Image: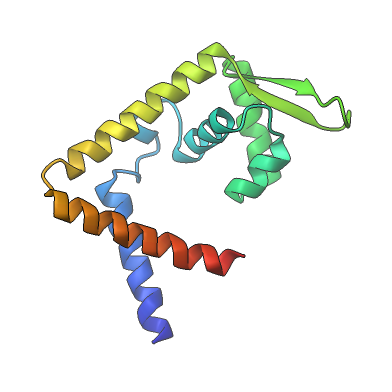
Amino acid sequence: MEDDIVLKIRNFNRFYLSVMNLYENNYLNSDYSMTESRVLYELYGKEGCTADDITKQLHLDKGYLSRIIKRFEKGELLKRQKSELDARFYKIHLTGKGRGVTEELIERTNQGIRKITNHLSEEECRQLGEAMDTIEKILKELSL
């Protein structure tokens, strides 16, 4: 049974990445990888978080995240501000440009999902949503 679920999850992951066109180096034909896009999205949703927060949320290597942050700073997508509580830490904020880039990526993602799902019936959308809720619920319980 254990090998069956491993195989099913691996097959689903490959299928999902292919359907969502996530194998590309440049996420949604942007200048950013999928990981970089996820970092932007985390910053967009958690204004003023630390690099440590992002590392934990996305399970990223600290050195890799540091390179992404430096690239984003150079591209004027974010700025760092020393924490008032602990000078060893920086709060990270998206700039106006960074928010605009992130909003464009969010809209492209939404359009891609709509394109994939627009032929589904209301019942199929409901079933798909319930199946995704079930997957998320089960996997969240494992990560607690």
